[in-house]
Length: 205
Picture 1 (cartoon, one colour):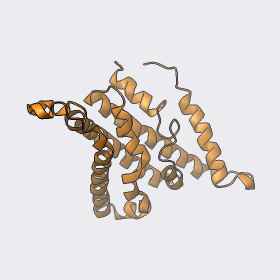
Picture 2 (picture 1 turned 90 degrees about the vertical axis):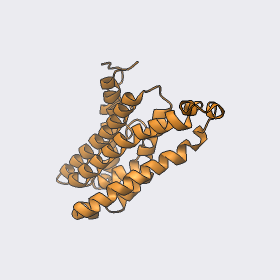
Picture 3 (picture 1 turned 180 degrees about the vertical axis):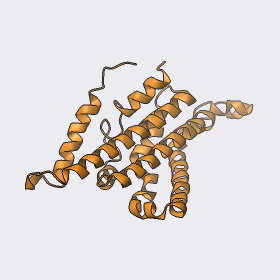
């Protein structure tokens, strides 16, 4: 069984949602133009994954998985398998959390709300956040390990978007060849960063 720290570090670098699975790329590229906006959205993703992954773990292991309802003591429910409802229930929990987060940010941080624009509510359908719950189901994690996995995945996404935003702000003052300006140099940066992150494959903690 992997340790909590190992799961966290592995999900930050080796299993990074951006560089290992290319998930959440549209938001990643669109919001990484400014460090401030990237930092704020990264924090929102950390919160979303850290909270929704363990919630969905509880939902799966106590309600959806085959035999999960045995705790009710009702014999007829002991072998029921509701795992086919997993996708829709995971999305519902994620959407509810993102809606609450959006309402809080709109009320208390209106300038940040305007900066993030449509990308904040779109976190509800961000494939990186949904993938956190889907990948968790396929791994033999307990609740603590699932929480570490969710937090690590969120922190990995946060690290990826803030570091890319810092590079894109810095590169504005560089003499980039005209054909590579904009999306071209951004994809080159992402590729180089992916090499750096995936170089952690093989390390054990």
